[in-house]
Image (cartoon, rainbow over all chains, first blue to last red; front, side, top):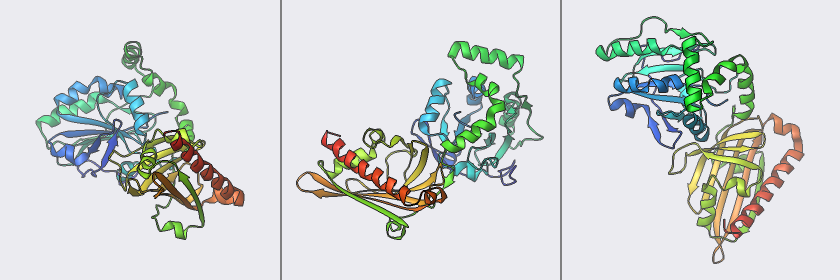
Amino acid sequence: MDANIPDIGQTAPDFTVTDAFGSSFTLSETLNSGRTVKLVFYRGHW
Amino acid sequence: MAEIQNRLATYEKLNIQVAALSIDTPNQSRAIAEKMNLDFPLLCDTQKKVIDRFHLRNPFEHDGIAYPGTFIITPDARVCYRSLDGTASRLDLTEELAFLEQHSRDRALLMQGPPKKSWIFPTPKDTWGMARNMVTQGNFADWKHFILLPLEYLFILADKIKTPSFDCQKVGLDFAALARVRLVTQIDIPAPPKDVFQVLEDQESWPLWFKDIQRVEWTSAPPFKKGSSRQVALKGLVLDETFIAWEPGRRFSFSVTAASRPLFRAFMEDYLLEPSGVSGTKLTWTVAYDPGIMLKAAGPLGKHMLKKSFQKGAAALAAFMEKGG
């Protein structure tokens, strides 16, 4: 496992992506609204 | 994912925004969201920028499919909980939620110790949950996940052919003059330039007029501009493209950033639209590329076949616009 993967206590990198319905999602924007984010990386379609 | 959906109310209560990310396209993600009735966003990291920033690219295949994993990120952007999941294990949400309940009372709390993982084989409770999902929602996803797990590596291999995993050098408009191979097609189209541009912008139109193309999908949100990206699927080839020029009614140009086969080291297309006569367009379609190993092996025949394909495409676009677009 890559040692550069953000670890406990470290800062998560910011990013912007499009979601399945065309809306834009920016991590820092969601965090700035005071919410905690549960970010799940998954394999996707088979 | 179904488990997360089942517990979504708990996450909401804790003011936690759930988001799931993969390298699937919006269409593929929408299919999953609809099939599993998901009420949280599925993020489309088609260009693998996010999985690279998190260093989650799967080294097994170097094909960009992310290691599965979960990060809980606090409003000050710090990771307070993390689970990195191999192919044969999943995060136990009960423990994660127990941590999150404690964390909601003590914001400084960080995860201690490794997270609890479930076996790949479903427990009786999981089995009941999956059966219930299958009957009430027609959801086969969980069963598929367990039954096919031993074949997972085979699927990763198959995916390698279907996902753009060979990076191409991103180039600019000046590349046309520098490229090893330059193919230029010129054709008159019986429609005004802004109509032609609209057809080029419309992802649904491409398979209708360019027979070699099966699917085009925008992978960045509209409005489209320089820097926007899309994915194009032909038979046996999938390409990720980023736009290097976007002038409505005048210029439509992109550079391929990744391909599912090592055909090109760099590849760009430039569609130049100029008014012709009263209501026509002169299209100058330039394709410029540096061949990769696979294409070099095909020699002059490869270049000839590409040239023919684009000439046919240009003629087809003209015919398509003549019929009303």
